[in-house]
Every structure is written in structure tokens, then in C-alpha cells.
Length: 152
Image (cartoon, rainbow, N blue to C red; front, side, top):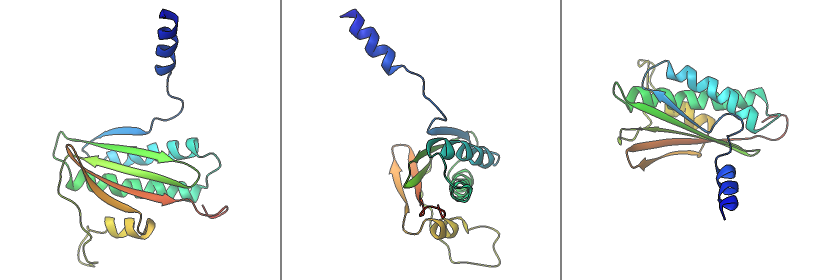
């Protein structure tokens, strides 16, 4: 009986291989760069042979989501969580922040320096993004579809 328990315990405590799917970030502008680096490591590891263009698309989406979360979904001392899931069909990016207020797409403007993040998100992930409430805030998510071979 003890041997069965030790075997089960050893299997459940096995170390993760490769980059973990979750990254916790401080609520500061530098976190966008950390998120970009995280995506550049995570996606190619979990989807070997993926195109550099696809990785850069996922990087841009993650960066926009993290930037919005830090800018509008946190206060000093808060944190943001990035959750990634990749396979050969798509990469899902979720960014969790502690504010329940949902972002909204603003009309395009040439006078504003800000407010284009969700427009970019909608262009890169048409119909494949959204927002839902979590116990202590919200999650903004997007899925980047893998294109056909050579375009993905």
C-alpha cells in the first residue's frame, strides 16, 4: 500500500517540462516585454516548427492584452496573470486582472494616442476573443488561429 502511494505521489509531483502555461506579472509597463519574451519561448516549444510570423502575431496579441490589463485593469501593487495554451490549430491567450470593468472598443480616432488595442485584437483574432468575469476580476482572452502550412 505504501509503495502504491509513493508511486502515485512521485508521478503527481513530476516536474513540468518546458515553459509553464502561466506567468504572473507585476502591474507595471515593463511587464509587456516580459509577456512578449514568455510567448516567444512558450509557443515554439509547445508547437515545434511553427512559423515565426505566427509567433509574432501571438506576441502582439499577448502584448496588447497585458498592456491593457496593466493600464486599465490594475492599480499599483496589483498583478496580472497570463495563461497560454497552444496546439497545432490555435493559441489561446488569457490575461486576468483584478478589475471587473470590461473594456470596450472605441471608435477610431486620429487625435488619441490610445484606444486602439481592441481594434488591433479584433483585426488579428476576428470573432475569436472575449471577456468573462472571474472570482476576483476579469479575463480577457483571444485565440490566434494557425493558418494553413506556410501561412501559419
